[in-house]
Amino acid sequence: KGQAVQPFLVPVALISGTIVYQLICSNSAPGSELDVYLSGWTLQFPKVDVTLLTLLTELDVTHVDLRICVVSSLFTTATAILPNAIGKLLVLSALEQRFDLDVEYDEELAKIGISHIAAAPAMIPAGPSVAAMQAAYDLGVRGKFPLYMSVACSLLMAVSGASVVGKVPTALLAAQLGVLSVQPLLIGELLKAWRQLKRAEFVLVLVHILLTA
Image (cartoon, rainbow, N blue to C red; front, side, top):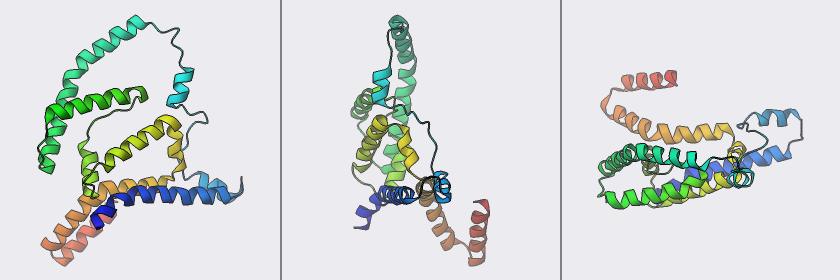
């Protein structure tokens, strides 16, 4: 039961924390000391944000040389397809070894190709990531939840633009990154040190970690 709930903790904490922050900001008087103080808690983006919708409406192709575009795209595709395919195969091989799975490489490469075509209009890189899969696995995810979250976040960014990230306080983003990056490695190493080291040596390890942080 705990494993089923754990994957939802990070997105729920991120969304709920953002809602609380925005409620506090909406109730603060404009220009007040609290309002100025809270405005420094988020990432600052330009007033005019470019989204996929505004890009399609403002894009002017009348002065574009299609011949140059086609030749350049074909040359880029021809030079990048081999190293890109090799890179994806290495990622799939790493995932296969890490999670002890039987990966059908032809099927996975076909799916990666489809995802690249679907993500091309939004200029979003697509494909598996060892770090992302490892983070999801350490959080207890064993289904397609990360896939749905990735699609939802990508669509949100494509439609609303990057300014939506400015709604989230940076302290909350830093906390989420800390949980995702530090928890799987640090907790395991601390447990190993607790079992193998003397208590005085374990205290020195904690002091070293705190001073380094």
